[in-house]
Length: 124
Image (cartoon, rainbow, N blue to C red; front, side, top):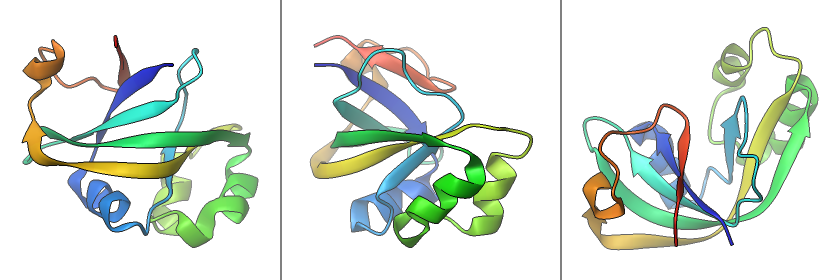
């Protein structure tokens, strides 16, 4: 079982927590199979707010990935295409069961000094 911590902007974290965003899009993904994602909400929140199960990882061209995921993307087509501009491959973690923390946690609780640019593996 592998867990990663992802830095995600608060506007997208809100959509994940409310259930309208069921995919987390990335330009690259972890080499190991990821079973769970710890969600770190970036500034101004700066807390780990939830843990979500990963039910799959999609890989396709940005255009085809948008066609597959747009109904639950939680992002506009314009922002999606902007994010993947110049890329031939796009990835999406498919999000499953979510557990929101009653008390948001600090990075220090996971032995992390600063927020990762992309992701960091969390040792269980």
